[in-house]
Image 1 (cartoon, rainbow, N blue to C red):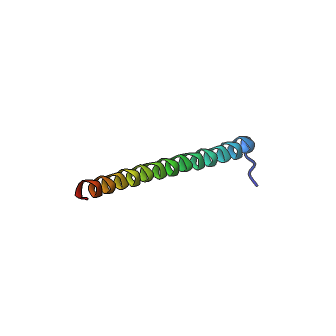
Image 2 (cartoon, rainbow, N blue to C red; image 1 turned 90 degrees about the horizontal axis):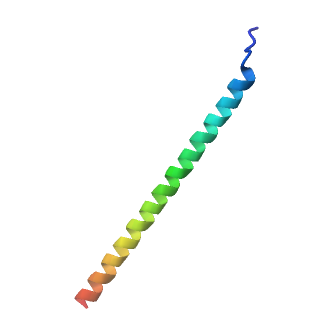
Image 3 (cartoon, one colour; image 1 turned 90 degrees about the vertical axis):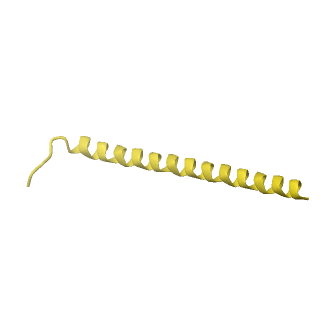
Length: 55
């Protein structure tokens, strides 16, 4: 059976890589949500302005 001298380091770096990926995914999700919210606000403003202009 082979033992890895840097087994602890490997497991630690693997866990931290997972944490980095998870935090990057959360950041991307937050940015996407924010962008979609801004698009929704802009679309709602355009609809309201269009109704005001037409009415």
